[in-house]
Length: 269
Image 1 (cartoon, helix red, strand yellow):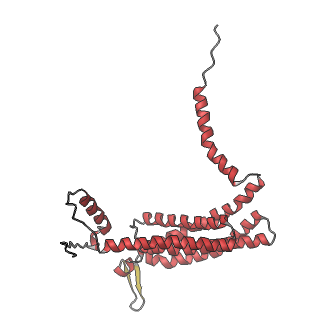
Image 2 (cartoon, helix red, strand yellow):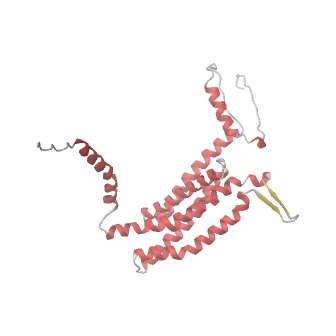
Protein backbone atom coordinates (compact mmCIF):
# COMPACT_ATOMS: atom_id res chain seq x y z
CA UNK A 1 0.00 0.00 0.00
CA UNK A 2 1.60 3.29 -1.18
CA UNK A 3 4.91 1.43 -1.77
CA UNK A 4 4.91 0.17 1.83
CA UNK A 5 4.68 -3.44 2.92
CA UNK A 6 1.51 -4.09 4.92
CA UNK A 7 0.71 -7.05 7.15
CA UNK A 8 -2.84 -7.75 8.31
CA UNK A 9 -3.27 -9.63 11.59
CA UNK A 10 -6.85 -10.68 12.32
CA UNK A 11 -8.31 -12.23 15.44
CA UNK A 12 -11.77 -12.98 16.80
CA UNK A 13 -12.96 -13.75 20.31
CA UNK A 14 -15.63 -16.18 21.30
CA UNK A 15 -18.46 -14.29 23.04
CA UNK A 16 -19.00 -17.21 25.40
CA UNK A 17 -15.44 -16.96 26.69
CA UNK A 18 -16.25 -13.79 28.65
CA UNK A 19 -13.11 -12.03 27.38
CA UNK A 20 -13.63 -8.40 26.38
CA UNK A 21 -12.07 -7.37 23.05
CA UNK A 22 -11.36 -3.87 24.38
CA UNK A 23 -9.36 -5.29 27.30
CA UNK A 24 -7.31 -7.46 24.95
CA UNK A 25 -6.63 -4.48 22.68
CA UNK A 26 -5.31 -2.53 25.68
CA UNK A 27 -2.96 -5.42 26.52
CA UNK A 28 -1.74 -5.56 22.93
CA UNK A 29 -1.07 -1.81 22.84
CA UNK A 30 0.84 -2.06 26.12
CA UNK A 31 2.92 -4.93 24.75
CA UNK A 32 3.64 -3.10 21.48
CA UNK A 33 4.81 -0.02 23.41
CA UNK A 34 7.42 -2.18 25.17
CA UNK A 35 8.89 -3.56 21.93
CA UNK A 36 11.84 -2.11 20.03
CA UNK A 37 10.40 -2.00 16.54
CA UNK A 38 12.18 0.01 13.82
CA UNK A 39 11.01 3.59 13.55
CA UNK A 40 9.43 2.98 10.12
CA UNK A 41 7.10 0.32 11.53
CA UNK A 42 3.62 1.60 12.33
CA UNK A 43 0.90 -0.40 14.07
CA UNK A 44 -2.75 0.61 13.73
CA UNK A 45 -5.86 -1.12 15.04
CA UNK A 46 -8.85 -1.45 12.75
CA UNK A 47 -12.17 -3.23 12.96
CA UNK A 48 -14.17 -3.05 16.17
CA UNK A 49 -11.58 -0.93 17.98
CA UNK A 50 -11.62 1.74 15.27
CA UNK A 51 -15.42 1.74 15.13
CA UNK A 52 -15.66 2.00 18.90
CA UNK A 53 -13.30 5.00 18.99
CA UNK A 54 -15.26 6.74 16.24
CA UNK A 55 -18.56 6.05 17.99
CA UNK A 56 -17.18 7.27 21.31
CA UNK A 57 -15.97 10.54 19.77
CA UNK A 58 -19.35 11.06 18.08
CA UNK A 59 -21.31 10.40 21.28
CA UNK A 60 -19.10 12.76 23.30
CA UNK A 61 -19.70 15.54 20.80
CA UNK A 62 -23.42 14.75 20.75
CA UNK A 63 -23.60 14.77 24.57
CA UNK A 64 -21.89 18.18 24.89
CA UNK A 65 -24.01 19.60 22.09
CA UNK A 66 -27.18 18.24 23.70
CA UNK A 67 -26.27 19.76 27.09
CA UNK A 68 -25.49 23.09 25.44
CA UNK A 69 -28.81 23.16 23.57
CA UNK A 70 -30.66 22.12 26.73
CA UNK A 71 -29.00 24.97 28.64
CA UNK A 72 -30.00 27.50 25.95
CA UNK A 73 -33.62 26.31 25.98
CA UNK A 74 -33.75 26.38 29.79
CA UNK A 75 -32.36 29.91 29.91
CA UNK A 76 -34.95 31.07 27.41
CA UNK A 77 -37.71 29.29 29.33
CA UNK A 78 -36.92 30.31 32.94
CA UNK A 79 -34.67 33.37 32.40
CA UNK A 80 -32.53 32.13 35.31
CA UNK A 81 -29.00 30.73 35.29
CA UNK A 82 -29.65 29.20 38.71
CA UNK A 83 -32.70 27.17 37.66
CA UNK A 84 -31.04 26.09 34.41
CA UNK A 85 -27.99 25.00 36.41
CA UNK A 86 -30.21 22.99 38.76
CA UNK A 87 -31.66 20.99 35.86
CA UNK A 88 -28.23 20.35 34.33
CA UNK A 89 -26.97 19.26 37.76
CA UNK A 90 -29.86 16.81 37.98
CA UNK A 91 -28.90 15.40 34.57
CA UNK A 92 -25.27 14.91 35.61
CA UNK A 93 -26.24 13.23 38.89
CA UNK A 94 -28.68 10.95 37.07
CA UNK A 95 -25.87 9.86 34.75
CA UNK A 96 -23.73 9.10 37.79
CA UNK A 97 -26.59 6.95 39.10
CA UNK A 98 -26.69 5.12 35.77
CA UNK A 99 -22.96 4.37 36.02
CA UNK A 100 -23.43 3.10 39.58
CA UNK A 101 -26.15 0.81 38.27
CA UNK A 102 -23.74 -0.62 35.71
CA UNK A 103 -21.30 -1.33 38.54
CA UNK A 104 -24.03 -2.96 40.68
CA UNK A 105 -25.12 -5.21 37.81
CA UNK A 106 -21.50 -6.08 36.97
CA UNK A 107 -21.83 -4.86 33.39
CA UNK A 108 -19.17 -3.29 31.22
CA UNK A 109 -19.50 0.22 29.86
CA UNK A 110 -20.50 0.17 26.19
CA UNK A 111 -19.82 3.46 24.46
CA UNK A 112 -22.61 2.94 21.95
CA UNK A 113 -25.40 1.34 24.00
CA UNK A 114 -24.68 2.86 27.42
CA UNK A 115 -23.98 6.25 25.86
CA UNK A 116 -27.24 6.15 23.92
CA UNK A 117 -29.09 5.17 27.10
CA UNK A 118 -27.59 8.14 28.96
CA UNK A 119 -28.67 10.54 26.23
CA UNK A 120 -32.22 9.16 26.44
CA UNK A 121 -32.04 9.40 30.24
CA UNK A 122 -31.01 13.05 30.02
CA UNK A 123 -34.15 13.88 28.05
CA UNK A 124 -36.43 12.21 30.60
CA UNK A 125 -34.73 13.88 33.59
CA UNK A 126 -34.87 17.30 31.93
CA UNK A 127 -38.58 16.83 31.23
CA UNK A 128 -39.38 15.96 34.86
CA UNK A 129 -37.42 18.89 36.27
CA UNK A 130 -38.84 21.37 33.77
CA UNK A 131 -42.36 20.44 34.84
CA UNK A 132 -41.42 20.78 38.52
CA UNK A 133 -39.74 24.19 38.19
CA UNK A 134 -42.45 25.47 35.83
CA UNK A 135 -45.07 24.58 38.46
CA UNK A 136 -42.98 26.45 41.04
CA UNK A 137 -42.90 29.56 38.83
CA UNK A 138 -46.64 29.47 38.24
CA UNK A 139 -47.35 29.24 41.97
CA UNK A 140 -44.97 32.15 42.60
CA UNK A 141 -46.76 34.25 39.99
CA UNK A 142 -50.07 33.55 41.74
CA UNK A 143 -48.71 35.30 44.84
CA UNK A 144 -47.88 32.27 46.95
CA UNK A 145 -45.04 32.33 49.48
CA UNK A 146 -41.84 30.90 47.91
CA UNK A 147 -41.33 28.16 50.52
CA UNK A 148 -44.99 27.19 50.29
CA UNK A 149 -44.69 27.18 46.48
CA UNK A 150 -41.74 24.77 46.69
CA UNK A 151 -43.74 22.39 48.92
CA UNK A 152 -46.85 22.62 46.75
CA UNK A 153 -44.97 22.10 43.49
CA UNK A 154 -43.23 19.01 44.89
CA UNK A 155 -46.53 17.62 46.17
CA UNK A 156 -48.32 18.27 42.86
CA UNK A 157 -45.61 16.61 40.76
CA UNK A 158 -45.04 13.67 43.11
CA UNK A 159 -47.63 11.31 41.63
CA UNK A 160 -47.02 12.10 37.92
CA UNK A 161 -43.25 11.73 38.27
CA UNK A 162 -43.56 8.47 40.18
CA UNK A 163 -46.10 7.02 37.76
CA UNK A 164 -44.04 7.84 34.67
CA UNK A 165 -40.91 6.49 36.34
CA UNK A 166 -42.52 3.24 37.48
CA UNK A 167 -44.09 2.58 34.08
CA UNK A 168 -40.82 3.31 32.26
CA UNK A 169 -38.80 1.09 34.59
CA UNK A 170 -41.41 -1.68 34.39
CA UNK A 171 -41.30 -1.60 30.60
CA UNK A 172 -37.50 -1.75 30.52
CA UNK A 173 -37.01 -4.50 33.11
CA UNK A 174 -37.48 -7.37 30.58
CA UNK A 175 -34.84 -5.74 28.38
CA UNK A 176 -32.49 -5.28 31.34
CA UNK A 177 -32.72 -8.98 32.20
CA UNK A 178 -32.48 -10.02 28.50
CA UNK A 179 -35.95 -11.60 28.43
CA UNK A 180 -37.55 -12.28 25.06
CA UNK A 181 -41.23 -13.19 24.78
CA UNK A 182 -42.62 -14.69 21.59
CA UNK A 183 -46.37 -14.13 21.89
CA UNK A 184 -47.14 -16.20 18.79
CA UNK A 185 -45.55 -19.38 20.17
CA UNK A 186 -45.87 -18.40 23.88
CA UNK A 187 -42.17 -19.03 24.33
CA UNK A 188 -39.92 -17.12 26.75
CA UNK A 189 -36.16 -16.88 26.17
CA UNK A 190 -33.66 -15.50 28.66
CA UNK A 191 -30.22 -14.35 27.55
CA UNK A 192 -30.77 -14.62 23.81
CA UNK A 193 -28.42 -12.78 21.43
CA UNK A 194 -31.05 -10.26 20.31
CA UNK A 195 -32.14 -9.39 23.85
CA UNK A 196 -28.58 -9.21 25.19
CA UNK A 197 -27.81 -6.38 22.79
CA UNK A 198 -30.15 -4.01 24.69
CA UNK A 199 -29.12 -4.90 28.25
CA UNK A 200 -26.64 -2.08 28.78
CA UNK A 201 -28.91 0.58 27.31
CA UNK A 202 -31.89 -0.44 29.44
CA UNK A 203 -29.74 -0.81 32.58
CA UNK A 204 -28.46 2.74 32.24
CA UNK A 205 -31.99 4.12 31.85
CA UNK A 206 -33.51 2.03 34.67
CA UNK A 207 -30.92 2.90 37.31
CA UNK A 208 -30.63 6.48 36.11
CA UNK A 209 -34.40 6.99 36.41
CA UNK A 210 -34.52 5.41 39.85
CA UNK A 211 -31.64 7.60 41.04
CA UNK A 212 -33.08 10.74 39.44
CA UNK A 213 -36.32 10.50 41.42
CA UNK A 214 -34.46 11.28 44.65
CA UNK A 215 -32.88 14.24 42.87
CA UNK A 216 -36.06 15.57 41.24
CA UNK A 217 -38.26 15.25 44.35
CA UNK A 218 -35.58 15.83 47.01
CA UNK A 219 -32.51 17.77 45.96
CA UNK A 220 -34.07 20.11 43.37
CA UNK A 221 -36.91 21.37 45.69
CA UNK A 222 -34.38 21.90 48.47
CA UNK A 223 -32.15 23.91 46.13
CA UNK A 224 -35.17 25.92 44.95
CA UNK A 225 -35.91 26.94 48.53
CA UNK A 226 -32.27 27.65 49.41
CA UNK A 227 -32.05 31.24 48.02
CA UNK A 228 -35.19 32.29 49.87
CA UNK A 229 -33.99 30.71 53.12
CA UNK A 230 -30.68 32.55 52.78
CA UNK A 231 -32.50 35.79 52.07
CA UNK A 232 -34.62 35.35 55.19
CA UNK A 233 -31.51 34.83 57.31
CA UNK A 234 -29.75 37.83 55.77
CA UNK A 235 -27.12 35.77 53.96
CA UNK A 236 -26.20 35.40 50.31
CA UNK A 237 -24.47 32.80 48.17
CA UNK A 238 -21.28 34.85 48.27
CA UNK A 239 -21.17 35.09 52.06
CA UNK A 240 -22.08 31.42 52.40
CA UNK A 241 -19.29 30.42 50.02
CA UNK A 242 -16.86 32.69 51.86
CA UNK A 243 -17.75 31.05 55.14
CA UNK A 244 -17.34 27.59 53.69
CA UNK A 245 -13.98 28.39 52.10
CA UNK A 246 -12.76 30.25 55.19
CA UNK A 247 -13.57 27.43 57.61
CA UNK A 248 -10.47 25.32 56.75
CA UNK A 249 -8.21 28.38 57.08
CA UNK A 250 -9.67 29.22 60.49
CA UNK A 251 -9.21 25.62 61.63
CA UNK A 252 -5.55 25.68 60.55
CA UNK A 253 -4.95 28.97 62.41
CA UNK A 254 -6.53 27.56 65.58
CA UNK A 255 -4.40 24.41 65.28
CA UNK A 256 -1.22 26.41 64.80
CA UNK A 257 -2.13 28.73 67.65
CA UNK A 258 -2.78 25.77 69.95
CA UNK A 259 0.60 24.26 69.14
CA UNK A 260 2.41 27.58 69.53
CA UNK A 261 0.88 28.40 72.91
CA UNK A 262 3.24 27.60 75.77
CA UNK A 263 1.92 26.23 79.07
CA UNK A 264 1.88 28.68 81.97
CA UNK A 265 4.62 28.27 84.58
CA UNK A 266 3.54 26.83 87.90
CA UNK A 267 4.35 29.01 90.94
CA UNK A 268 7.13 27.64 93.19
CA UNK A 269 6.06 26.46 96.62
